[in-house]
Image (cartoon, rainbow, N blue to C red; front, side, top):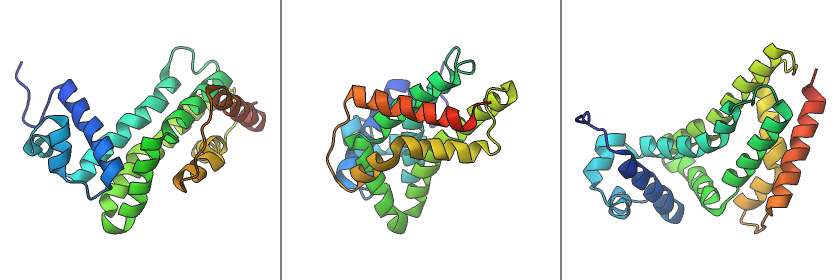
Length: 202
């Protein structure tokens, strides 16, 4: 079956997003589409045909990373076991948000806020904002099931994100080097979930 105009196959799309992450992490928001295309092994026109602009490409990058985190909210049994699900969400959030490449992208977005605000906005809205909104949707389900009482699910989701990332993301953004082991990530995730449940569990 022929693809519609602007469509590309999955492997080519993944190659473009991987290349965009690498190039923008290295060179910032001013990274050229030519370099992204070269590393992805596609033409620059292929990228523009599919994404249209650098902002749309940045949005797709952020959406893919956010999906890595929120998939756990839709796993079997997630709704029935909120504390375990929140701990799993927290583990993924820490793992995805504070690695070196993510930090480089966040720093790039901060710089872009004044020079290319559409790119910075796309990264925020498709990444952190969308991730917290999806967590808020999950908390609404828990409210309806009578397991949680979150008067403002979106605010509660923001609180949880801050509880998990806290000083780790700030230190990373400022270039302070530290490495959380898997055991330390587990400890932070479990404690954040426990504290959240103590605050909101019925």
